[in-house]
Image 1 (cartoon, helix red, strand yellow):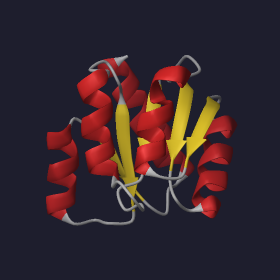
Image 2 (cartoon, rainbow, N blue to C red):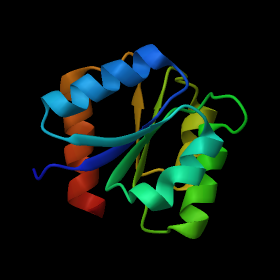
Image 3 (tube, rainbow, N blue to C red):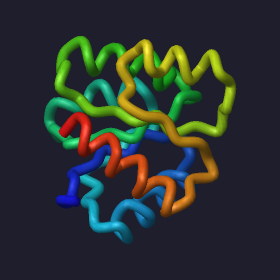
Length: 124
Protein backbone atom coordinates (compact mmCIF):
# COMPACT_ATOMS: atom_id res chain seq x y z
CA UNK A 1 0.00 0.00 0.00
CA UNK A 2 1.30 3.45 -0.90
CA UNK A 3 1.96 6.00 1.81
CA UNK A 4 -1.05 8.24 2.45
CA UNK A 5 -1.13 11.90 3.48
CA UNK A 6 -3.49 11.97 6.47
CA UNK A 7 -5.31 14.67 8.44
CA UNK A 8 -6.01 13.62 12.04
CA UNK A 9 -9.07 15.23 13.66
CA UNK A 10 -9.63 14.68 17.39
CA UNK A 11 -10.12 16.95 20.39
CA UNK A 12 -7.97 14.72 22.63
CA UNK A 13 -4.27 15.54 22.54
CA UNK A 14 -3.48 12.02 23.73
CA UNK A 15 -5.51 10.46 20.90
CA UNK A 16 -3.85 12.76 18.34
CA UNK A 17 -0.39 11.66 19.57
CA UNK A 18 -1.38 7.99 19.52
CA UNK A 19 -2.98 8.19 16.06
CA UNK A 20 0.03 10.07 14.68
CA UNK A 21 2.41 7.41 16.02
CA UNK A 22 0.26 4.52 14.75
CA UNK A 23 -0.08 6.10 11.30
CA UNK A 24 3.61 6.91 10.92
CA UNK A 25 4.59 3.47 12.24
CA UNK A 26 2.61 1.86 9.41
CA UNK A 27 4.18 4.15 6.81
CA UNK A 28 1.84 7.10 6.42
CA UNK A 29 2.43 10.85 6.77
CA UNK A 30 0.32 13.01 9.08
CA UNK A 31 0.06 16.31 7.18
CA UNK A 32 -2.12 18.09 9.71
CA UNK A 33 -4.08 17.97 12.93
CA UNK A 34 -7.38 19.59 13.85
CA UNK A 35 -8.85 19.59 17.36
CA UNK A 36 -12.39 20.66 16.42
CA UNK A 37 -14.76 19.85 13.61
CA UNK A 38 -14.79 23.46 12.47
CA UNK A 39 -11.01 23.57 12.37
CA UNK A 40 -11.04 20.42 10.20
CA UNK A 41 -13.47 22.06 7.78
CA UNK A 42 -11.34 25.22 7.72
CA UNK A 43 -7.99 23.54 6.98
CA UNK A 44 -9.08 20.63 4.79
CA UNK A 45 -8.72 22.42 1.42
CA UNK A 46 -5.27 23.81 2.15
CA UNK A 47 -3.93 20.40 3.23
CA UNK A 48 -5.67 18.28 0.57
CA UNK A 49 -5.10 15.04 2.50
CA UNK A 50 -5.57 11.63 0.87
CA UNK A 51 -7.53 10.53 3.91
CA UNK A 52 -8.92 12.04 7.12
CA UNK A 53 -9.47 10.32 10.46
CA UNK A 54 -12.40 12.05 12.17
CA UNK A 55 -13.52 11.84 15.80
CA UNK A 56 -17.29 12.08 16.29
CA UNK A 57 -17.61 13.85 19.64
CA UNK A 58 -15.86 17.24 19.56
CA UNK A 59 -16.55 20.80 20.68
CA UNK A 60 -18.17 23.33 18.32
CA UNK A 61 -18.93 20.93 15.46
CA UNK A 62 -19.19 17.17 15.77
CA UNK A 63 -17.38 14.86 13.37
CA UNK A 64 -20.52 13.81 11.53
CA UNK A 65 -21.44 17.41 10.67
CA UNK A 66 -17.80 18.23 9.85
CA UNK A 67 -17.78 15.23 7.48
CA UNK A 68 -20.95 16.52 5.77
CA UNK A 69 -19.45 19.99 5.32
CA UNK A 70 -16.11 18.73 4.01
CA UNK A 71 -17.81 16.41 1.52
CA UNK A 72 -20.17 19.18 0.37
CA UNK A 73 -17.14 21.15 -0.86
CA UNK A 74 -14.80 18.21 -1.59
CA UNK A 75 -16.85 15.19 -2.72
CA UNK A 76 -13.65 13.21 -3.33
CA UNK A 77 -12.67 13.42 0.39
CA UNK A 78 -12.03 10.08 2.04
CA UNK A 79 -12.99 10.19 5.73
CA UNK A 80 -12.83 7.43 8.32
CA UNK A 81 -14.64 7.96 11.62
CA UNK A 82 -12.65 7.17 14.76
CA UNK A 83 -14.66 7.19 17.97
CA UNK A 84 -15.23 5.58 21.32
CA UNK A 85 -18.93 5.42 20.60
CA UNK A 86 -20.00 1.99 19.44
CA UNK A 87 -23.63 2.99 19.09
CA UNK A 88 -25.28 1.68 15.96
CA UNK A 89 -27.07 4.97 15.22
CA UNK A 90 -23.79 6.93 15.20
CA UNK A 91 -22.26 4.42 12.80
CA UNK A 92 -25.27 4.80 10.52
CA UNK A 93 -25.18 8.62 10.78
CA UNK A 94 -21.47 8.66 9.95
CA UNK A 95 -21.89 6.42 6.89
CA UNK A 96 -24.94 8.42 5.80
CA UNK A 97 -22.84 11.60 6.10
CA UNK A 98 -20.36 10.06 3.67
CA UNK A 99 -17.73 8.40 5.86
CA UNK A 100 -15.96 5.58 4.04
CA UNK A 101 -15.13 3.59 7.15
CA UNK A 102 -15.37 3.42 10.90
CA UNK A 103 -12.99 2.35 13.65
CA UNK A 104 -13.49 2.23 17.42
CA UNK A 105 -11.18 3.55 20.13
CA UNK A 106 -8.93 2.36 21.57
CA UNK A 107 -7.42 2.02 18.10
CA UNK A 108 -5.23 -1.02 17.53
CA UNK A 109 -2.46 -0.76 14.92
CA UNK A 110 -3.53 -3.95 13.09
CA UNK A 111 -7.16 -2.81 12.85
CA UNK A 112 -6.13 0.66 11.70
CA UNK A 113 -3.83 -0.74 9.00
CA UNK A 114 -6.57 -3.14 7.84
CA UNK A 115 -9.21 -0.37 7.70
CA UNK A 116 -6.90 1.99 5.79
CA UNK A 117 -6.02 -0.73 3.29
CA UNK A 118 -9.66 -1.62 2.71
CA UNK A 119 -10.76 2.01 2.31
CA UNK A 120 -7.76 2.93 0.10
CA UNK A 121 -8.34 -0.06 -2.18
CA UNK A 122 -11.99 0.89 -2.63
CA UNK A 123 -11.88 4.69 -2.72
CA UNK A 124 -8.35 5.95 -3.46
